[in-house]
Length: 112
Image 1 (cartoon, helix red, strand yellow):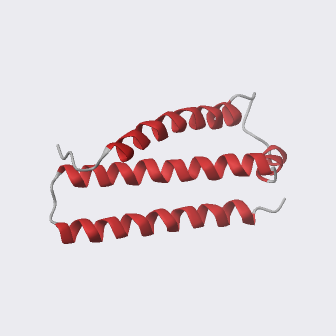
Image 2: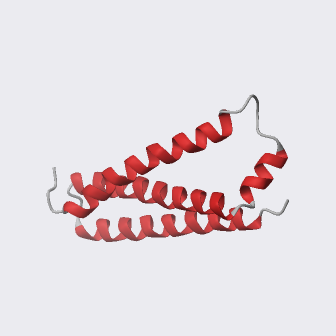
């Protein structure tokens, strides 16, 4: 196992996992806790509420960080050559930023 990664990525991976567990539970109970599938009106009210939009953006950011940091940690465990690591890290950053921007645009574009 590679020990050069440091304490902060390791700690943030664990904390983001805890936040994801809570966020997914809230998301699941909100969508599946009612008697049936959510109606359009319920979804529209949720996706126009600043609180819910903030919740989903924070959940998305934590999800992206957790997933991509996990992939980065796996790549470090394999002791890959430095040029590959630099390219892989850049790729992960681009995927993360692109995914977050796509999520932001999707949440922002919803008009009831």
